[in-house]
Image 1 (tube, rainbow, N blue to C red):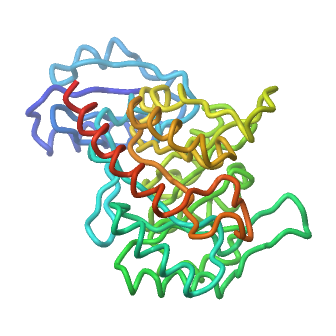
Image 2: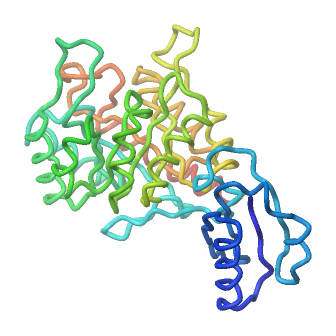
Length: 337
């Protein structure tokens, strides 16, 4: 149940009302104070609460029952957009375009630092790179693991770019204490035990949509993290599995406005995994920016032909430079519409 309070109510009056709801009906009440109104989200058995009684209170503007099973990720409970602020002050979801760029896998110190310096020069605000790599084949390159994390941190120290990298198991959480944004990959979107552990952290979590999951299932996974106390969640559409075989996955471009309508969390797009083809990355990046994505995650490699993983979908630093310039201009134009 959602209760929207009228503007200007005193905090003491609101607190007394919240305590009454908790004591009398046994529900949990989450309070969100927005720019224009205060919203109370009631979680629990609200069937015993008389809506007419609530509507009769002079400080209540409206009351609605919620059907969606996700509460904390629901925009109805949190009308204002959530803005994620990184340790260096950079914001995701504030109306700017956040670009995360870097290689699929960290391969060497020279490689990751070279790419980090080049993508930063082109305007990327975050460095993405894989240390622990989930691969379909057990014989494929699995990443440099802990050593890869150390190299990412060296690139961060060298360039100042915050880093985004994927976690494979909650057993490795201690290794990620200096990682700025922890990524949950498509294969782990419904690893609920890991999501619970990530919910205990005070660190941004980038949650990728499972390649065979619905939007509601994605939001329920976000709910697992937020229910644990960590509300710093970034949603990522990265393509889903369909009957189409022309591309690696099918980018569900409509997921961006749908997610932004249903949820207050920032939404970014990964055009590299969505297509699996480097020549499509520009087209999908442009489409994602035009439709209102809060950011993009783009794979960039200095030698895609010899990349240890996903070289076919990686663009070169020069290609990224041209693309980033185009995307920032497009984003500026879209904001004026």
